[in-house]
Amino acid sequence: MISNIHDNKDNSIRQGRQCHVAGKVRNYRNKEEYIGFYIVSSSDDQEAQENDLPANDSLKHGFGITKFPDGRVFEGTYDRGAMLEGKMTYPGRKNNSTNGTSSAGFATTYHGGFDREGRRCGRGIYTTATTTFLGEFYRDEMNGSGILMHHKKDADINNKGNSPTTRCRRFVGHWKNGKKHGKGRELLGDGTVKKEGLWEEGRFRGAAVVHKQQRVSSPTWWTECTKQG
Image 1 (spheres, rainbow, N blue to C red):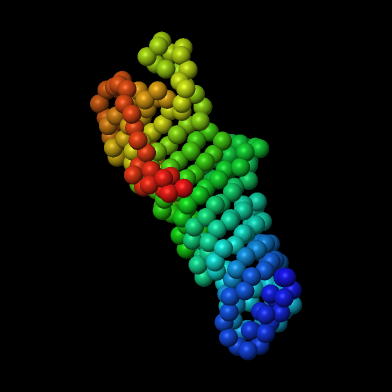
Image 2: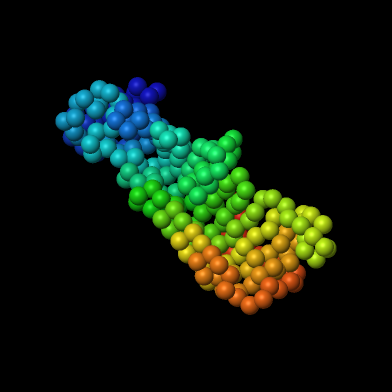
C-alpha cells in the first residue's frame, strides 16, 4: 500500500502540482521518523526522493506520528509542518521533571496544543510521575489559570497529622512562567483549604494560613471537555 502511495507521489511531482500523500518517511539528516500525511510539490531534489526523504518544499500536514532522536514521540495533527494539537510522550529519566521528563520508568505525557516552534501552548494536560497539571501553557511553561494535582497522599492536618487523605492535594489558581503567580488556593485531599490568597513568583504573599473545607470544581472549559467525551 505504501508503495502505491509513493508511486502517486512521484507522478504528482513529475506533473509539477501539489498534492496530499501519506507514508513513512525517515529523515537521515536529523534522525526523525514520521508516519502520516504530508503535502508534497514539485522539486529537483532527486537525492531526497530516492532516500525516502521529504523534498525541500514537503510539509507534514494532517495526522501523523513523529519519533524524535531524543526519544520523544508526538501523535497528533500538523499544520503545514508545525505541530498543532496532540499527545507528546517524553522518555523517562532520573528526576528531571522540569525539562519534560520524569523519574526512570515513567514516561511524562502532554495532551494539548502547541505553538509554531513545537512548544506547549494553550490548554493542555501535563502528567508526570508525581503531578498532573490541567490548564494553560505558554512557551512550554504553565502560564494562566490551572489546577496542579499531586498524586501522592498527604496527612490530614485536622487530625493531628496522622490521617491520610483519600485524594490528592492540589493548587487551584494562576501561573506565570511556570510559577504560582496571582490569586490561588492550596487544598488538601479532603477539600480543606490550607492557604488562600496571592502568590508572587511561586511564593505565598497572602495572609495567615486558613483551614476550611470547600469543594473546588474544575475550570469551566475542562468540565465542558469531559462532558463531550
